[in-house]
Length: 234
View 1: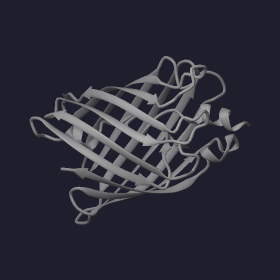
View 2 (view 1 turned 180 degrees about the vertical axis):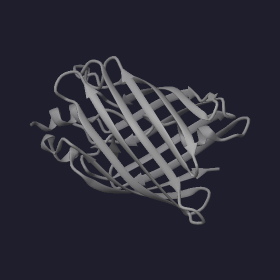
View 3 (view 1 turned 45 degrees about the vertical axis):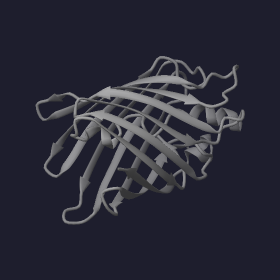
């Protein structure tokens, strides 16, 4: 399979895709949080967006109490056709339905210097309910786009996820299992499992195992360990 075709199948998104930014849950009446980070790879739904190389990213997130959020996120990527940067714009609301928090949002994925004959930018809508079960949080997520990256047509992504802090430690564990469905024979499953460490209230580390069931599509789909760090301000 050619490298360009592998990237068309795999290059479908960003870190903001199915979860609101962490600061969107901030209870302050109005606030803006800036964040920067780096990782050994940019993984999205189990597929490397940097050709299995390092990532540097930044974001600005605004929130109005627990009602809603909006933000922008940017990262380096490694696609063909001179496209080396992804920028995402997103927003949504987080109503409470009893014990369930429902994240209703939209993400616009954009790519710098994209060629006119290969439109990569696309929009994805999401709904992601979650709730606490004891010390753990469990959630579902569903995202839909009517025309995916590279004009691949309608696509959807479903996910089951969970996270839990380790009591009396700065560590937490989390994982997810998902299914990306694309028009034609491009569907694949993905899963991840990781441990996070909060150095303090502003700096955190994450070590995560990623995998898919499509190793035959190229190295960007292969299993890997990714180490990342993120700092938030203020």
